[in-house]
Image (cartoon, rainbow, N blue to C red; front, top):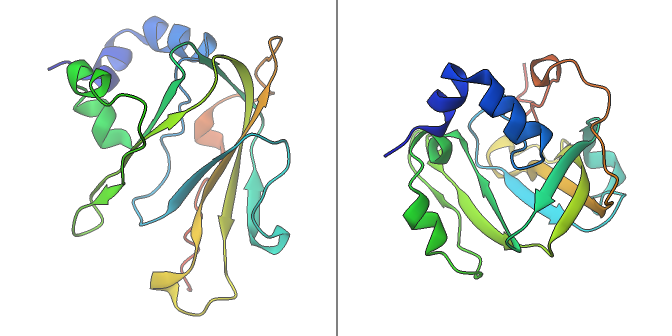
Length: 167
């Protein structure tokens, strides 16, 4: 079973090529939490404005199979191509394991094409119940055959934390 992350680490050119071609959105600095992920075909967030914590520069996503796999790092490290090819086009429920180790995988239907993608982090900080507050990420997809990456030196430079625990 290939470890895609390890392959990209040993061959950064391969990883950079996958990112540049829009086959992979490298949003890997997200802490483990029971958060939601939304994919919206729009250029403005659908979540309440007061929940928005950040908006990233744009990424590029190239869809060629009408399927987008939204997965955590566990799925990348333990990549099994045959499993993902068998998913078909039906969405799967996200499954979370105990002790903040999660294996969330969601298969989403997205029409083929090139997209400009903006990541919006959100959290309902007005909800005092930290464990049940709505936190997550909304990926705004805008169809754009000329899509290019926004100005970004490194994904490591972004603070993608949406949990915002009380201090």
